[in-house]
Amino acid sequence: MDAEQLLRGLGATGKLKGFYQTVYMIEQVKDDPAAAARITRCLYPETAERFDASPCTVERNLRTIIRTCWNCSDHSLLEEAAGIHLHRQPTNREFLDMTAAYLRRQNQI
Image 1 (cartoon, rainbow, N blue to C red):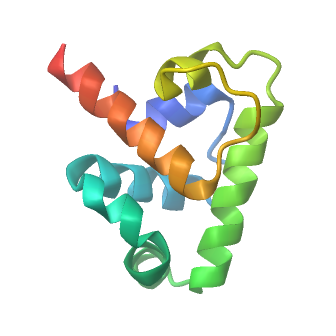
Image 2 (image 1 turned 45 degrees about the horizontal axis):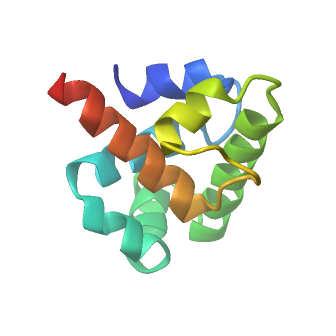
């Protein structure tokens, strides 16, 4: 499974503006878990440059993707990725970290 397949499984689609930006960021965090700690300082600006956008737009688009995934009635895949029952919508950093970690675990199987 890759980041695009995971996002689609979570209920997001390529029609959403930040879909491919989010795919890119998840892959970056998957390859370098420490990138999740540098989300504002490095990951947003790097993604913005790659997709010809502003860091603020990247951040907002990621929130939209997360909200879309959270608003799906079935949270089972999201909770499987998180490894816990979720009582609230994850933050941007939490979402990137949990989805990247989930993909790392899936690729080890």
